[in-house]
Length: 246
Image (cartoon, rainbow, N blue to C red):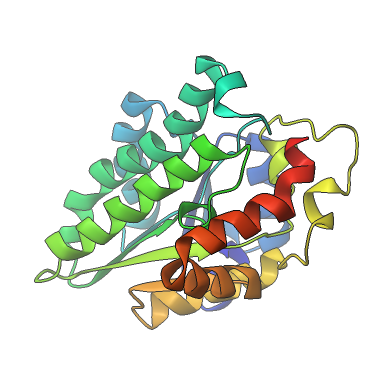
């Protein structure tokens, strides 16, 4: 997404817990000051509160915010999931988004036109066994974003929610989740979408002021099925994904 925005002439303030990842993105971008690095933990509210001033100092203004960061949980049932893991997932996936929204909304509202985009998940409407808390955190992001759309309807801020399916980003490893030593387990259940395609969909959604967008044929199909027959959709996902839980 960063590379696509930069290629279109935008300036980007990259925010990541992983400073090395930001360095790698900067090296790929090779655009000088149009990409700035901000190694910040989005669960640290004080650090996020200070972030707008740093971004504005670097770029002059903020015209758009995209909340993409997220982690999954260990593939275990709620009964087996420790509260420490539950709190980690909720802190990153929900409170991280809330922290960033609260910090940047006043600045977005001050612009002639602005965009706020939050990434939920197919898991917010198609529950996966062993990912109940992850799904709940993303369902909270979904509803928060839709409510923000309603609240900001008569303002200059456009609001978008994104529902990715399986994207080949290595989210399990990045979340510290062990999939039993099978490096391919994360992507073997069904076809995944590339990060490049996900970035294209997200940037396109910003440009076209979409209310919502899905990424991948899996997310699109489950979006329809979960509305037509939610019980059938839930049962089907449970059977397809049961091997990961086992």
